[in-house]
Image (tube, rainbow, N blue to C red; front, top):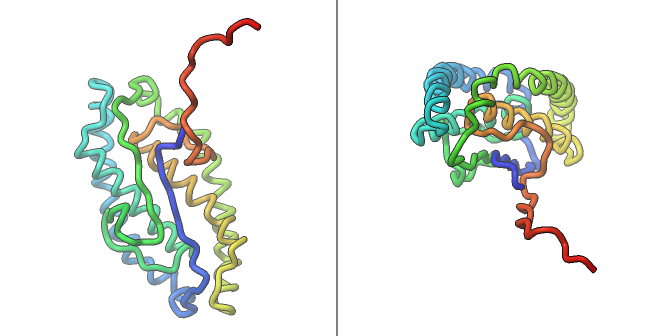
Length: 204
């Protein structure tokens, strides 16, 4: 079954040496906006937690707001760690706005009350994995910084390694924000849905 949190990022061969050199300073305004955005998102997720427990559904307006936050956080994360060289647009953006980092989430009809109630506990293993992947991302971004400043390019192989942690972080953010019941793992997003079961095979 296809994974409901869709993350797509385009590799940019050429990078700006200048903006890469000063990236740690250029990302500060984005981090400030993201901090205020995250406060609002936490409040919305808290309210949605109660709504899901009572109704089994995520209020549609809240779902759109939180999905926008996850999209923006993912874009800022990618920009900060040099996975993309494009300055992220401020705010939620949209899946068709042309930015090289695209995030969308399939809105579920129903959500599990049980896993929602225990979400904080269920997040612990995922956070351990995310911690390890964050170390990998920090290390590779340092290597990428030197390569880009010297050559103006980000090698495809290094980009693919860096893509894995940011993809996982996006899935984790979506799961923590309750907008999906799919546990963050390393599933492909494009696996076909299984064929419907039609009963046991006929005897030969």
